[in-house]
Image (cartoon, rainbow, N blue to C red; front, side, top):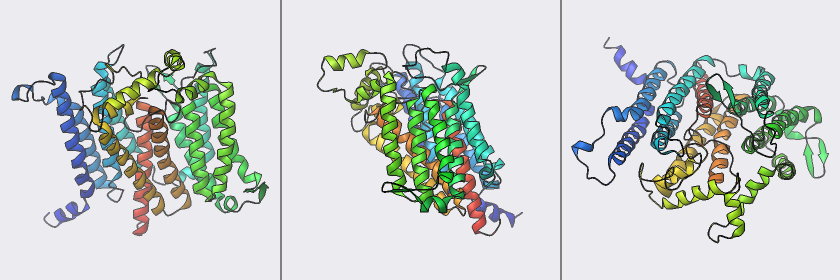
Length: 467
């Protein structure tokens, strides 16, 4: 037994455990601050108003599940990336804290159980991540079923058309929501993963042909139609759903994934430029066809500092600028350091509709300030760095493109929703990864993390000659 002990200690994922210390301390401190602020934000700190162990359950639940995964991976997948999970664990923990903080203050219907449900979704998400790592013994298996994957994703989103077609107001945005009994989820969260799997598989098979290009369209050289056709067809089918489901965020995300993957697969910037020109044309068509798209673009031109009659009209109309303006007021009130967790009013005085999901960035800005937002963006950048590093170190073209494409999803979603919250882009229903309330997004994001961890583990084992 004495000879085995050092081996066990050496095999443990100490780097990951050490990195977990920072998220664990932050979660406990912020949860304690939230409980103290709820009790009486103006009273002096004393033994009587210190948080109880029961009040710390959300933070302790996050810590317990992450420690369990750390021990499990130390036994079975010690060579997997050790930085990715602490980063997403920190963001997910803050997502639970924000849901716990915002739920009781939501207007017009408070929801005290919002944090508990988000904690449950986090537990399910981490479980799905672990299951993904265990079951995905051969990532190359996904390459053989690329058409099945994308067809499954499109089918799920297509099922939501049955609900959407019941709504006769085609000039309003639809709802990407599929209900099964008491539960509901967003099929587009799975569609984005399926699309990346298809693009990664197809581009890895046709990389040489796509990178050469022998079809001339003015100054742009395109690949043969035989190779270009399936890409355009799958993209067209996915975007066609936008005409029925009418989700601007879904269309932006899918097209952004296409742009990233076509560049990563071919290395040709000309394809990206040509695709952007097509995107402008499609955007103009959507602008003309849908009134709600015109309204959201109209919000971008609203002048908050110099208020006028047109601003008042945009502010009050359905689907207008009310949500954005209220969010910007809450965001600006945070200043540099913020009001502190539990001391702001994102769901109270500064009533921001759907603040727990679509507008979570503004709530974070009010309570953590500009410095807190920079820290959060820095964490996202570190996640992107680790994801792209896993892609660079992968040993096959498919796994390289798959890891890079899945990592690009986090970049695109973060860009779209943060820019929408700050009135740089039209606001969409894209969730902020790991921070926005919602089970569908959290489960899908942890599936992505599971795939990335599996790729990193397989790569490490292959380089050591174990596979």
